View 1 (tube, rainbow, N blue to C red):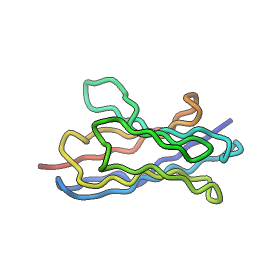
View 2: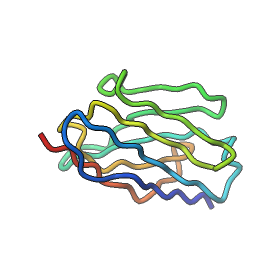
View 3: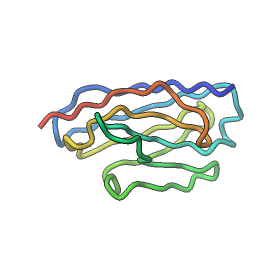
View 4: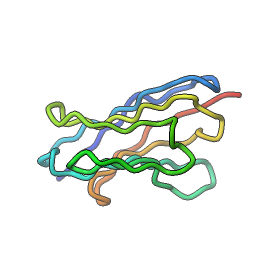
Length: 112
């Protein structure tokens, strides 16, 4: 059973930065396709960024050029570096493995 634990959320002013981390256990992490999703209040959960086992990345248009997803297979951890944050980035951010396993989420609040 894959377990995912997110950390790094918090309150930040617009224009600021945060780095989210997701620690994984219970699988061969290097084989996992890892994703970050977010869900804003009253809205559907949406894919923000993805990284394949080979290191290829994908971003939602709304975060391209501002967010960077990366992984450290030695630490079984995936990261989401978020720069130039905007109030509309406010959401609960969820880590996902292989489009199947979910963490409990970490709240990011961006004040204007």
